[in-house]
Every structure is written in C-alpha cells, then in structure tokens.
Image 1 (cartoon, rainbow, N blue to C red):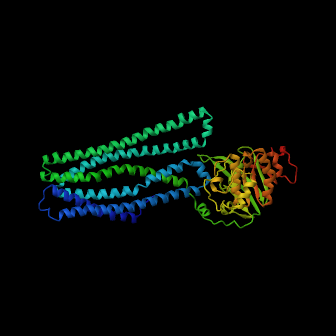
Image 2 (cartoon, one colour):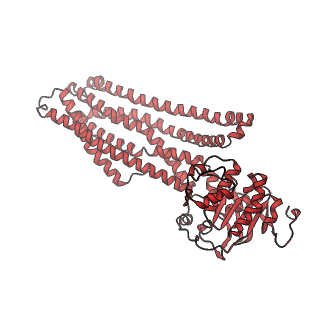
Length: 546
C-alpha cells in the first residue's frame, strides 16, 4: 500500500511554500497594476513579474519530475508486492477468494497511486487560499469573513454529497468483483457455454447483464453527481463574485477601489478552491480503495512461520529420500460458517524410496486432498509428516524433493525453471521417450510451449517434471487423457523405466487394468485409507479394491 512518509511530506512542503509565494506574488503584481497603483509600479516590476513566472515554471517542472518518478516507482513496487503476496498465499486462500480479487486489487492500487498528487495539490491550494484570504483581510476584515462564509457554504454542500457517494463507490467496486468472476467463467468455460444455449442465456441474462445494468446505473449516478457538484462549485463562485460586486459595496463593507482587488483574488483562488473541492472525489475513491486493499492484505495475510518457509534455501536437494511417513495426519475443509465441510484422515502411511504407489478411490474420496497435503499445498490441521524418520518442520524440505503433473496441468508461456531446453540432450531424449519428437521438431522454447492436445500437453508437462530431477514424481490422473496405445506404453514401459532410474512414483489413477504395475495400491474412501495392498505379495483381483 502506498504511503507518504515524513521525508516525502518535507519535499512537498519544500516545493509548495516557494511555489505558493511566487504564484501569489504574480497575482499581487497583476492586482496592483490593474488597480493603477502608481506608487507600486516602477521599472523593475515587469522584470520581477517575468522572472517570477519563469521561477514558478522551473520549480513546478522539477517537482513534477520528482513526483512522477516517486509515484511510478511506488506503484510498480507495490504491484510486485501484490504478486509476491499471492505467490506466498496458501492454495486454500486463493481457492476461497478467487482470482478476481487480484484483478480488482490491482485496479485499487492504481487508484491509490494518485495520493501524492492529491496531497501536493491539497497543500498548495490550502497555502494559496491562506495567503489570498490574508490579503483580503488586510483590505476589509468584514468582507473577507462574509466571502469565506459563502465559500465554506458551497464547499460544505459538496463534501456532504461526496461523503454519501463513498458508499455507492464501494458497492460499485463489489459489483466489479462479481463481474471479473463472470468473465473468468466465460473465458475458462467458453467451450461449455458454446455447447449450451440455455447456459449462454443464463450467464448473460441472469448474471452478466444484471451486474452490468446495476453497475451502469451506479456508475452513471456517481459520475453525474460528481459532475453536478463540480458545476455547483463553479456557479457558486459566480454568486460569491456577485456578492463582492454588488452586495458588499451596497452594504458599505467594501470600498469601491477594493472591489477589483477582491474579484482578482477570488478569480485567482477559484483554481485552488476548485482543486480542494474536486479532490474530495479523489479522496473518496482513495478511501474506498484503501479499505479494499487492507481487506485484500488481511485475506491474503501470511503468518510468520509460512513467511520463513518461503525464504528457506533448498535444504533437501542433495539429501537422498529413504522414507516418507504420515502419522495421524488430518485435514478439514471449512465452509463460510467455519463448519467442517470435509475431513481427511487420520492418515497413517509410509512410502519407501523407489515405491510405485497407485492412489485409487471414488470421486470425493479424498485423493486430491491427500495429494495437496503431500505436495505441501495444504497444511495438515493435525498429525506429523516425517522425512527419513525426522519430522518436517519446513515444507520446502518436502517440496524440494517433489515434482508434480496435476490433472489440470498448465504449460507456462515462459521458462521459469533453472534448466534450458536449447542444446539440451536430455530434453531431446525425453521428446523421443514421450513420442513427441515428431511433434516438437526443434529445441526452441516457443515450440515446447505452444498449444497441444490435452494428452500431448500432459506429456510435455511430464518432460518438464523429469527435467527437474527430483526423486518423487506425483502424477494426478496423468494417463486419463492419453490414447489407449500410449496409456499401455505409460504403465508397461515408462513407469518401470522411471523406477529403474530411482524415481518414487505416486500416481492417482482409475486404470484398474494396470494396477499390477504398482508396488502398492492405496484406496481412499470418505477421507480415509480403507485399503493398502502390496501387489508383489498377493495376486490382485479388482474386486478386492472396489
């Protein structure tokens, strides 16, 4: 979140004070020349006037360069912090709040970046008004008091309406949160929407259109009110000038020779006054954005333990895996009312180095939850995980030994890993192993990251996983998208090959015809392990597992 520290405030004041004095000096010269004050005018006045303009310009252009550099630096630094917070957040947090929160947080951050400009114009405008009002008091204290009262009256109406608008701005932001969720559904579920007329009509008529209609009405109302209030401030100024031209002289509060001075000062101060009035709109939006960014930071808050684990060096890379043991491990999902919606465990399981372990079970049995705990994406709510007989205190210890291909695998558009594909003989060999050498004919990054069929995409993800050279390979229903020939090849040739190379393989699968290629079959049901079968010691019968 963007903040102004005392040093920045000092720089703003360092700019604002001389800029205000010089600007007021310009209006002071104009006022006296227009009034025909002969005692004021001499041969040096034109030079003083011109140099005041030049110095004011130089001060402004220098300060604006610093301010722009400062704002953009802070803005982009905060965007990086935003992504860093997302990357450090637990998977459950992202699943709970949705990716649309990130999009709206970025928009809010952009709004918040206008704060330095708003503060600068506010300080400058206030200083200018103070000098102008002080000058009016030297001419007529009563007239100055009346004029200030009229200005406060106009500004007060503006602030009251603006305060009422802040709630509607917050509602509009909430609508945009929902809108980004609908857009995500539209993009990610485009094929499903194209296949169903009723689904397309429902997402448009029941969700997108009502959301946009409500937002349009709110957006129009908010901007119309802002426009109306701006016009009130403009025409309110005309009423103040009318009071100076006709009312105050008629009441005997203002001498006729001072009317010009008052009008010139008011016209000059109209800019600063309008700045302060109009900046209320900016402050309202900043206030709403500030609350939302705070809520975002709170929702994606990382505890100190998690923060430490994210900064741990890969301590396990050079340690050989011997055993991985789950002792009384439990995990529970909670709904919005903090009630348990699903519970996994207690899980007691020991995995030895070089094991080929198949995880089976029906939908909702707990397989995916177990994989998320195994990979460190979920933190167990109870129990211990032991690596080579020692309790894991840092999740990186386990994650640094695991590579995974999830069922909804994703091929990154860029290479974020530590290996290179170009001139990589192992990569070229793996392309042949995975029967992709006729599809990917060179070793360029763009060739490996283009659009593939689902089965080919998973094969490419497997290649990337193997290039990480980690001892544990986790495959989440990897073979489900392969054709029958390659599925047979995977179970009968690839798995034995990976085992010979020292990989520990944990695969979620439903392919019961190939269960005999595993060392063990672990079946989940209702969040618990109900069977743990060693295939080498007893003949497998499908009915023993289902």
